[in-house]
Length: 502
Ligand code: MV4
Image (tube, rainbow, N blue to C red):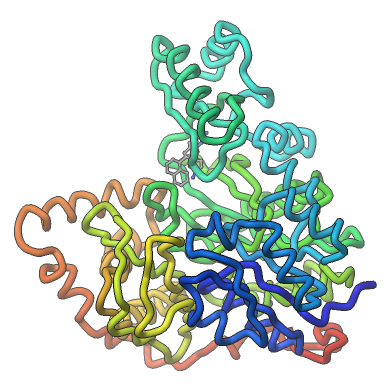
């Protein structure tokens, strides 16, 4: 069994920092890679070693497989953690690591490939008995035949790119007369975006919930799930606020969806951490959407309610060790909410905001976790994802987590660039969120009208939302619970061979 002594983290920002922290907990050496723009970034300062890999644009640094492999060889790293984005779901990279004798901390190239092809994924899920939105599992060839299929599914339908995912290359068709035209447009869009013109058709679900399950699989056939996350608050297919557990599903559904998620992971011989995304319609029917073969941005909400370190477990299973716990050992405790703190102007269509981080003070206190990838004084450029940090709060109840989030957002002090902090404060105070009754139309339904009203009057930042942001939350229920109240008391098998607590 390979033992990992040194991990190269092929990423930057908050996720590189997140991974390095667990490596340190486990006594594993770390290597950071950095572009011209990241010479003094936190992930570089935190790692034991660092290797410069090129110019600021990611196409010339973080995305160049040869440079990452070269850096791993130079530093004698045994393994590479890809984080999310960049090379994390690139089967060529996973394969290259294997060929070079470097452990890729993630699934095999074949699992990544199978789930990256959305028609292939639908085929596998269908065979595994996982419910799918009605539609085709094969790419559309003949438009007339496809049109008949759409008729039998019933309108509205959605045309999706086989090579797409995450909302890229999708079209809603509400009317049979528009079908053929939309198929050919979708095909040419898919060809130019992905170099693959295959598209398929699905029943379009109105106002669904986006609910996903975290799974973990080892190389010994053990697959477990770590419950669900509600990710319905999105704008332009980017999640902004996530929480665990979902308020929408019943315990019976939770257990059915968890079984489906485990079956989905088994169907592609999955190993490592993965996420099965589902759409849940208003009648509470659930359908497989896609599988993400990486650690997700929103993984901390799962960590907060289960007390598990997902990165530590990714490393263990990559080494070939069996999962140190069984399904029945995974318990839920309390509620967690995550707000994505992005360098974006929420009031200008979430346009990326760049500049000098003149002031950057992060919140802390009971039930607060901040996974941040930037520091005061840094430049925020357009070269990378606008995610600066994730603010996560835990509470023994959902409302305690929400009150703590309001307090933490009000403590967050950023100047020099615009962030999604005021938007997140708006979400926390919006009654539909406070009640836990919202779906994927949240931003459209509740934020857009408020924004329009504000833009019609005064500077939004000095307006109502500014007041919300500045107001200090006083209600934390007088409780001082922190993560340490987790019931997941360590027992002997929770200790790995490094004698570390997971
Ligand atoms: C859908 C859908 C309705 N019906 N598929 C797929 C990727 C995701 N980011 C958007 N996707 C959707 N697929 C069917 N059959 C609605 C969406 C969708 C959506 C899903 C989750 C969260 C926000 C969304 C916003 C618009 C559309």
